[in-house]
Image 1: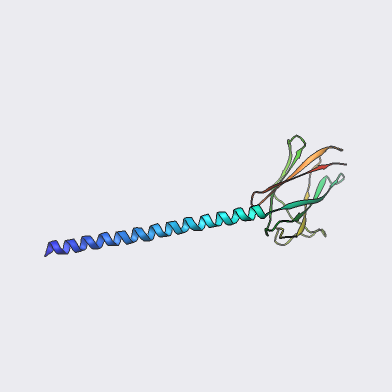
Image 2 (image 1 turned 180 degrees about the vertical axis):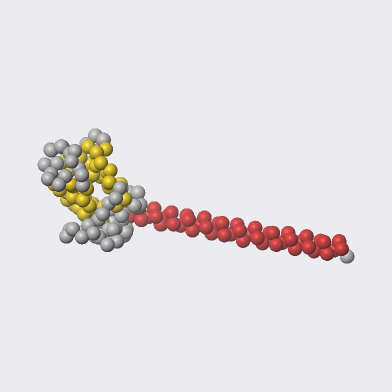
Amino acid sequence: MSVTIASVILVGAVLAVSFVWVFWAQSLSSVHLNNSSEAVDQSAKTQAERLVFMNNFYNWSDCNLKVDLINSGTADNVTVKTVYITDSSGNRISVFLTITLIDFNGHAIVDQDLDRGEQGRIVLSSLNNLVAKTSYWVIVVTGRGCTYRYMFVTS
C-alpha cells in the first residue's frame, strides 16, 4: 500500500509542477505579446508624426531664435525632446534639452505637446555666437525619436 500512495503522490507532484510551468509560460508569452503590440503601436504613431516648420525669427538683441511649428501629421501628443542648432556643415552650435512649447501669445502650452493641426512655438535662447548672413540648421527631435530639419539664414 505504501508503494501505491507514493506513486499517487509522485503523479500529483508531477501534475502540479506541469500546471505551474504551463501558467508561467502562458503569462510570459502574454507579456511578450503585449510588449510587441505596444512597439507596433509606437511605430505606427512615429510614422504618422509630421512636424512642419512654419516660421523662424532670430532676434539679434536678445540672441534668441523663435521657431514656429505645426503638427500636420495624424498622430497626437507630439512632444519636442531635443533641439540642435548646427552650422551648414553640421558642426554643433547649441543643444537644447529643456524645451517649452508656447502658443503665439507667449503662454506655455499646458500639455506641452502638439496634437493634430496644433501650432506652437519654441524659443531658443543664448544663441550669441551666430554670424550674420550665415546658414544654420534647426534639428528637432520628438519624444518618439523622429527628427526634423530646417535651414535658416540669419539676417
